[in-house]
Image 1 (cartoon, rainbow, N blue to C red):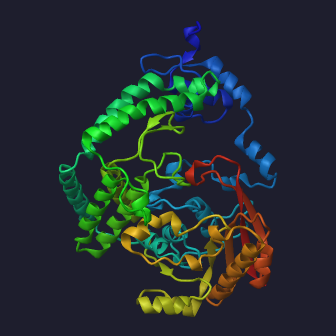
Image 2 (tube, rainbow, N blue to C red):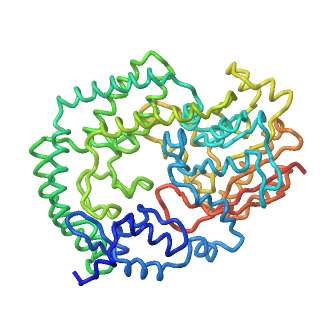
Image 3 (cartoon, rainbow, N blue to C red):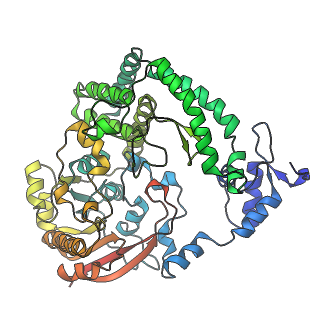
Length: 530
C-alpha cells in the first residue's frame, strides 16, 4: 500500500466530523462507512480496522459535488418540489411504528400523508384542508398509511380495498391488541419450533454451511477490498464471481448429501409449492398449525401477520431479486448486493423470532400515539360500494356521523397503469390462509399492460370510484390523489368525475420499494368540486 502520512488518516467518526465541516452539512459515520464498504474510497486500515485518507475523501467529494437535488431536477424538471421529498427523515422515521409491520409495494411514506392531513400551513400549503375530528376516506387503501396517520392526527378514517389481504394488513395496523398475550404466544411458538427442528437436520446443516461460507468469502471476497477492486476495474466481477460460485458449489452439494437436505418440493402448483425449499415449507406449515390453536382471535390475527411477514423474507430467491422473482434459487450463488457468495434460507426461525419481537415493539410504540378515533378498512369495489351500509352491517362506528356531517375528503394513491399486480405481491399469504382473490376487480393491473385500451379502462375505473365516493363527501371536499401520471390521464379523470384540479404538487420519491435509486417523481393532484 502507498506510503501516506498518518496525519491524513482518520477513523470513521473522525472522518464524518471532518466531512461535515468540509461540505457544510451533516455527514454521518454511516455515510463514511458506506463509501468504504462499496468501494468508493479505499480502506487504509488493517486487522479489521477502518481508516480513510483525507485526500481520498476530498477527491470523492470533488467528483461528486453536485447534490442529489440538482441531479434530479436536471432529469425531472425544475418544478420538482424538493421540500416534499422529506429527505431530512431517516428510514426509521419514514417506516415508523406500525408502518413497517408488513412489506407493501407502492406505499407512500407517512410524512406525505401528515403534510396534507395536519393543520399546518407553509409557502406551498396555504390553508389546512382537514381538522381534528374530520373523516377522511382512502378508496385505494393499500396497506393503510392514510388510516394510521389519520388516527395519529386525531381524524376518523375509512378505507376501501378490493384485496382482502390489504384490508387485513390495514385493520391490524390500526387495531388494539393484548400485547402481553401476543408475546406469550410468540414465546410458546418459539419453543415449539425449536423442538420441531430437533427432528430435522436443516439447522445444523445451515450452521455448517455458514461456517464454510465465512471461510470461503474471507479468502475470495474480502471486504471491503473486493468491492474497491471491482469499483476500480481491477477485477472483472462477472467472470470472477462465476468462477468462484462454481467452485463453492462442490462444497455445497457435499453438505446437502451429508445432511440429506430435501430442496425442491414435489408439487409446484401454488406459490408456496414453488418458492420455498421443502425444509422451509415444513416449518411454515408447523407454525401456522400452532397459530390456529390460539384462542384470542385478535392475537391470532396479529401472529398471522407476523407469519406472513416472515415467509415473505424466506422465499427461495436471491437477496437482490425479492421484487421480481425470476426463478427459485436452491443453491448458493454470488450476491451482487453483498459482494460475496450467499445462500437461500433453510429455516424461518430467525426471521420469525426477529419479526415477532419487532411487531410487538412497533404496536406498543403506536399505542402511545394513538387517539380515540375510528378507522376501518372495508373490503369491496370502490366503484360500487355503499360506505354507509357497509359500516352499518359491521355494527361499527361512524355511519351516523357520515350521514349527518359527511366525509371531509380523500387522501389516496390509486394504482398506476400496468405497474403492479396487487394480489400477486402477497400470493404466499393468499395460498397459506386460503383468502379469496379478486384479481378481476383490480384497476390498471400489471397483466393488462399500458396500451390505449388499458389506459381508457383505467380512466373509467378511477373516475367511477370518484363518482361513487362523492355521494358521501361534503360539498366543499378536498381530494388528494398521489400518482405518477406519465400518460396525462388525470385531467380527463377529473372531467369525468365533475371535479376540477385546483393545484398539483410534484415531488421526488426517494424511498422506493426494493431500493431503486433512479430519479423518479410523482404528482399529488388536489381536486375540488366544480
